[in-house]
Image (cartoon, rainbow, N blue to C red; front, side):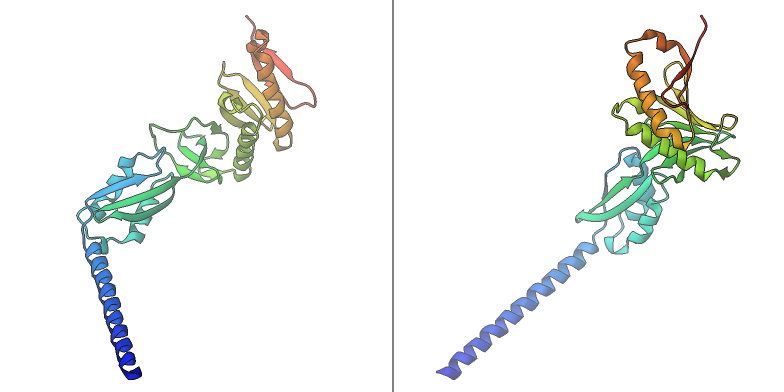
Length: 251
């Protein structure tokens, strides 16, 4: 009786092994079949500034009507990173015939304009990226006086980004919207902010004065709401301790 039970157990185990092998072969066959299917569509996710069409046009010749097994994802990623504002790009297959490209974009902090007029994006890491006109570009400050010819003053660039960050950190979150341009005045050896309203100038000073100067600038805008006389200020000098100096337009 015991031998009969052992035989039955062995038969059951053998059948289970065969069933397991069958399912493994079925899965392998399905995977192989799936990877032999050509891609028919591209789906782009995560774009804000970069148009989806730009990404699709960049890769469609490599992927459309191409079996997934023949698509070189490393080459695809390399090509995607040729887009200036591309930070990361990930690809996956959501259906048998669709490739999904999920991307993240670099954060643009400023638009740097060189003396000869050439433009660069400046990202949050202080890197210069080739400029390209997009419909959905964020409204960021313009930087001047930071680059001469092909030489970038890295220290001035980092200080300018620190000044932008200081403006953003103010309690009045709309203060950054008042900033049109930032440039370094070599004669004054000071950073200067050109304001959106009336193109007035706010002299900030050097890096050591950023915190106090920007706080006074924020206070200036609060006071200006209740004092129209301050709207006539041609420039304001914020470099002095506990003081703000004004110059007014003469009517």
